[in-house]
Image (cartoon, rainbow, N blue to C red; front, side, top):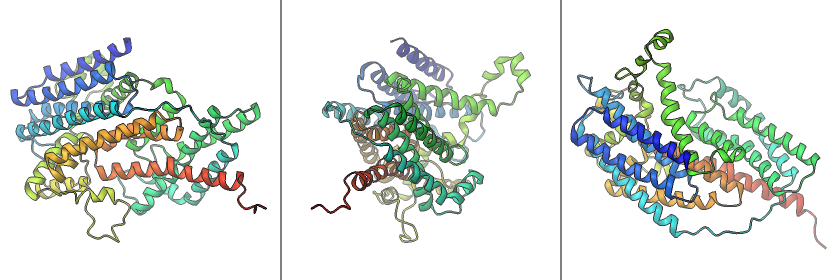
Length: 471
């Protein structure tokens, strides 16, 4: 209870500070305050009422708080001192656009929450007696050997990724990048999960424990080699590293308040603070002699004008795009659901929504960068308007309820995928949907389907001895 009260105190303190210091019209203030009340109610339910562990809602709350509350309120403070208020990508600020955006967000949050609660309570998780699987060291060893082979066969690509700056486009095809980075490079992580399951479900002696531990350390080393800040973007690293905590230090994330507090501190306090401290205009001596400089007007809000926090305002861009070009009626979503079809085979393949948003600000506001984010909410509006927003909220609620059953499974691979999906929601909700969906499917294949197939073959050929003809 103490931790819950501590979190709520921090949450409410920051919220009160945001609204007390907000200088804007009453109508815009009320639109944000209404959304804050809805989000606070969801947060209270999640922390104090919801009994089932659901890191999905923890991520959902933190995403909404950061990108749909903190960031736009900070941006308004910046707009107030501009002669011609406009975001970094030159899209102009208007109060009416922000109010409409808040209306869409409120609709989405209400529909999502109602369907989540209703479906979660309707689907009862059956308590089955865990089935112990006698995984063998040979299965782990085969995964380890295959992981090493992946490194050897893709060594040139790996070196290229290490040396390539994040802003430079890779010379490899998108399909190759997806298969290697999002599927094959996750094989050692699957091996690490297998090791943990081996510890839990097998009776092992000291010698086997030493061998399993040695292979586990080697597999973790491969994971860190494949997945590090030099080879992967932070939105892909976060879920993987948090999954390590979930697997190895489960007590750190085994309750709703713990997972919410951790994400809240990292995303809403830690990340913006680090960005602020690296871009501050004052030296260390000046700050030490006058700490109030840290809280000078607009110092804290400048960092939120970067494209890292464009989610809220890009909903406005989508509304304007729809006003100019009309709804997509589901055609644009094919870029996500058929992401695996190469553009060389499908010349008319629709663009991702992030690219559409980027092209809109390029064509109409003389911006220079095309591939922007586009929130999950805006995907629905771009395709079907307000009906699309409602449909996307329902789909998200149903997907979370489905993976809740996986999170409560005795199968550690299912639990791992479910937790990964919970953390991946930060990327999926920020968008765009095409990239978020494709990256998750790649992870799903690499962390669940591929190991399942490999283990099936190991069991079939090494233990069933299918090559021996029965008499």
